Length: 117
Image (cartoon, rainbow, N blue to C red; front, top):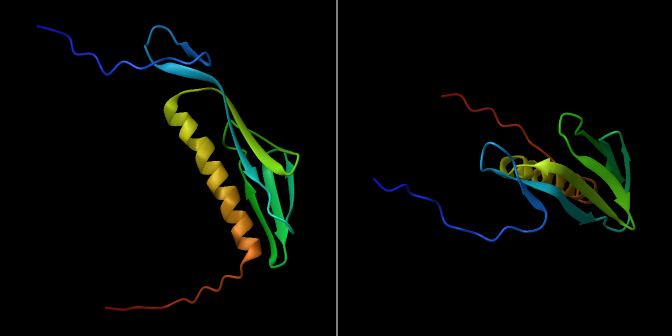
């Protein structure tokens, strides 16, 4: 019986093997988002507060093992020693912050509809 191995891939310098499994961990992964003009953002202990012309929105990311900070007009999110499934959280956090930016830039109105069948 022959053992089947997955497709081989090149390993970057930022990945290190975790023993005894063969799952690779990334040392540092970073995502950045540009802050649009006219929006103020404050980050304090993973609590993000975004304010714009249509109000203020807050979001708490304390339950995630990420590092959030602002640097030269952009928000940066870092994650250390993460596996591939954990790295998906990083992109999700950036999407949430982008949605906060859109929420204070544009005005949204929700209408409730009640449907009874």
